[in-house]
Amino acid sequence: MKHFIWILVFGCALAQGVPAQKAPQKAAAKKKAEPAAVSVPAGAEKLEDGLWRARDAQGKTWLYKKTPFGIVRTPEEKPQPAQPPEASSCRVVKADSVEAVFEKNTPFGRRTWTRRLAELDEEERRALEEWKKAKP
Image 1 (cartoon, helix red, strand yellow):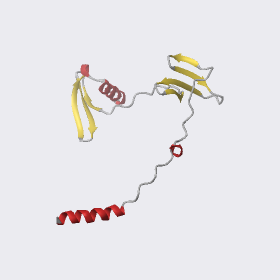
Image 2 (cartoon, helix red, strand yellow; image 1 turned 90 degrees about the horizontal axis):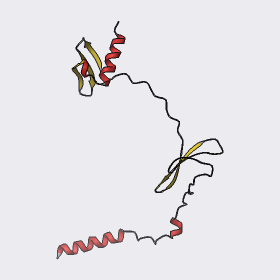
Image 3 (cartoon, one colour; image 1 turned 180 degrees about the horizontal axis):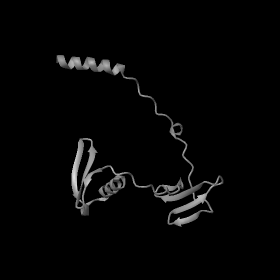
Image 4 (cartoon, one colour; image 1 turned 45 degrees about the vertical axis):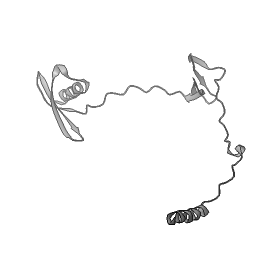
């Protein structure tokens, strides 16, 4: 009984400290302005099903794509020129006519391995070519 009284006293004290709930606001006040619907311009060039290209008055080219949520407009990006391959992350320590010894720095220290020349992967082959060019 003693515990019940304490619970009742603390419950009443907590209830007095709780602010009253606010009245619900009008739905019109909460409603945000919806974005304008995008449509494909009349003179757009059809590239494939659901994809068009058009140029605006400022000369910028846009792609219009049909999605399940409507038409989406994105700027057309020019393809980037192919970049030259990066320098290999591994380096050749020594090589002979049969095999090569490679070395690579890792977060756990330096890693060294040996590979036959016929079994080299692309990164190892690139490192070997760089090593041969740098060798006097």
